Length: 269
Image (cartoon, rainbow, N blue to C red; front, side):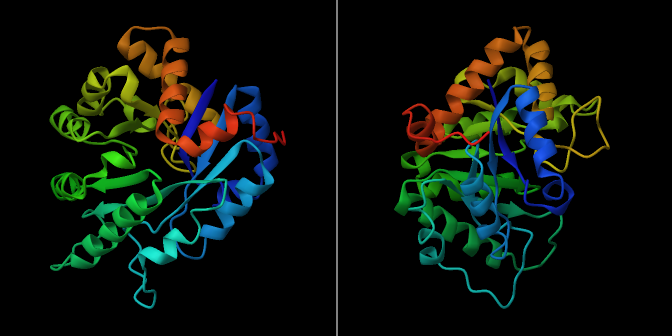
């Protein structure tokens, strides 16, 4: 069993052929996928996908790249979705200094803090995006005392030192197809170090397809290649990575654990 812990099946590149990608998941023994919201206008899209497909779950959140000057995010806005049985996390949230070069980044910090507050209020884990912002993201998570809700640093692209720092404050680390790229030596070093009980795998589909599909459309079934790469990198069997990342997913996303392992989920595939 494998789980894609972060994808965007609602994006048009995948949504137009959703049945095909769900079948490919089944064929490749990728049993579950977490569909991640990025904007106010796609939160309900990902929830509807999760409602319609037993093996999909949803998050609620606003990506840090989205400025949305006419939208006022509040903690209550995020919390209102938390009672839905298939909403299992808050995010994707975080900080991104790569695309945003504003002199004043307080708007991103304020939004991130709202997500942190919502996670702590609901008990749902945070799905965190960082890009050229690890120091500030780490500081906010540390000060936010997020251990009670849990956090995953998705699509980890930092080095070993930052992996240690995020692990020290209780975060899980998720690796995408980027770890398979030849020039990703720092990420690979971190991937060898992260304890087996704190590691997740993801696609971030439709982006970042792993080798040998780099540059092509990504989809949840391809998480198999990332998992196999991690197994080879760590010199263990694929089954060990599959079991560990699945167990970690359910430890972090407790609502999914209650539904799937508690036998309360009606499988629709």
